[in-house]
Length: 308
Image (cartoon, rainbow, N blue to C red):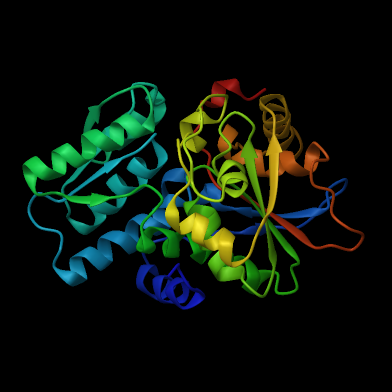
């Protein structure tokens, strides 16, 4: 059983007061889309929603003890979990791959979490997080494939559909699929979902082609945030329940979309978040006449010096 809209609504009630209701930017000259500016969330990323929901549920159930939580993350999920842990008085250990951007690691440490480095990719960091949990008794929090994390992510789509109630389509970037699964749960029966991935780490497209989640090679400009090796089970369940429109974009198209977000809208997106917009700017997804489309700009943890 996957995550339902009821789970998302419950998560919204639970995390209210802990997260920001992020704004929606309406279409301007030359654009056909609304933008859900989730990059303005605490920590600059949508994952703060799932972080609070996961930890609050863990505290309610008495699962989280003195050892706190441990999470493997390319950066953003660890950042969000560290922020939530500090707010809730929970000890946090974040295991990051060696490739994790310094800007994210420094902020994780600033929130008081312990940072461990392990391996070249998220998959290796995840194995290390399990070993830490076994040794310390810390509760494992998954970056994208736990029901509470997914339901928390879906709350942004609930907000979006309240703000633009006759929306037809929501465009989201996909890495491990937590955001996609949450948005799909919230939007089911109300709006279609366009799931956008970098060609160099296509977890969802590969799972759809194989009929099950499979390992993929990880690389490219968005690997620090969309660099999961395999689609999560909850995301695959969501895709089986209602198949999304699956779109792949190149690194060059992601970079161009990120540049356009900054140049024309002054939205400082990270590469992974710009992947969703790249589906439109590249022409790989072309809305029908009159189609009301919203793009989720899900993160801003990037080196601002790379924005021109």
